[in-house]
Length: 47
Image (cartoon, rainbow, N blue to C red; front, side, top):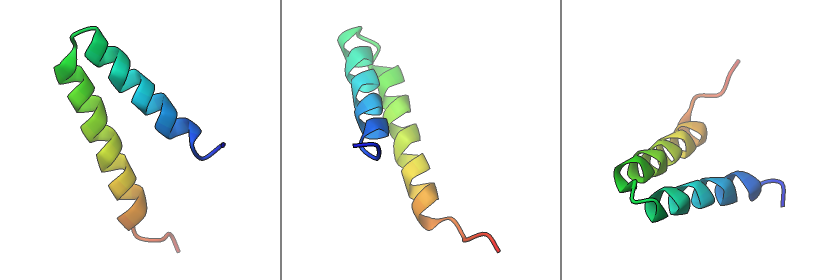
C-alpha cells in the first residue's frame, strides 16, 4: 500500500484539477509525474 500512495495522490490531484476545469495544469502535473517516473527508472546508479 505504501508504494501505491504516491500514484493515488497524483491521480487524485489530476482528477481534482480536471474537475476544476484546470486541464492544462492537470496535464502539466501528469507529464511531470511521467517524467519523474522515467527519470527514476533510467537514471544511472550512484557509485
